[in-house]
Amino acid sequence: MKESLEIVKTRIKSMDMASQRCAPDGNASRVSQCTAEHIERLVGCAMRWSRHHTPSLPACTTHEQFMRHEEESLRLRSMDEQDYFEATGCLAACDRPRFELVSMASSTEKVVGPNASSSFNIYLSYSTGRYEVREDYLLYDFGSFVADVGGYLGLLLGHSMYSIFSSVVGLLKDKKK
Image 1 (tube, rainbow, N blue to C red):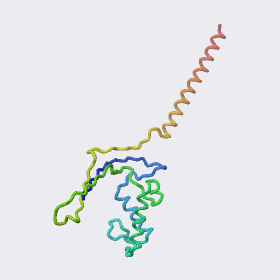
Image 2: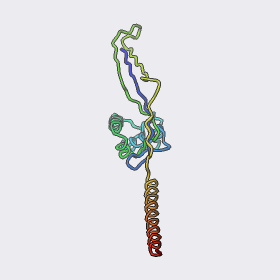
Image 3: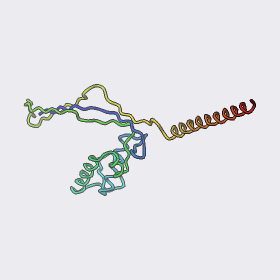
Image 4: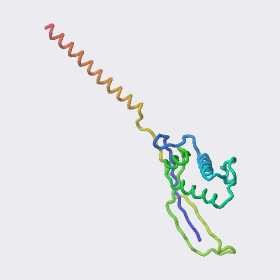
C-alpha cells in the first residue's frame, strides 16, 4: 500500500497583541516543552523518554496515566491558538511555520518482496517549491492617531487665528477711511 501526501507550508508572522498573544522570541521547542510540562502537571507523572519531561515528577507507569496523557494531547490539538494559550499558558511563537495537507492519494498496488504483507510506504512532497508568508503589522497605532489629531487641531487653530487677525486688520483699515 502507498500513500502520497501533498503539503503546503505557510509562514505565519503575527504581532503579540492582547487579543492574540504570541511569543516574539519563541520557538517550537519551547512551546513543546511548555505543553509537555502542562500535561505532566495535569496527569501527575512524566514520560521519561520525552526530551521535554519534568524530572521532579514520578515516571508514568500505568495504562490509565498513559491514556490520560493521550487524551489531554488530543484535546489540546483540537484547540485554536487563543484557547490553547488560555488552557496551558503556552504561547505560540510569533514567527512560525504552518503545514496543511492539500491532497492525499492512496494506492493498493501489490508490493513485491519478502516483507510484502507488512510493507507500507508514505511519500511526502510540497505542492510547490514556494511558500506563502502571512504577516501581521500595525497600520495605524495610537501614537499616529494622537499626532494626526494634534496636527489637525493645530491647522484649524492656526486658520482661526489667521481669520481673527485678518478680520481685525480689515476693521482697522475701514476705521481709518
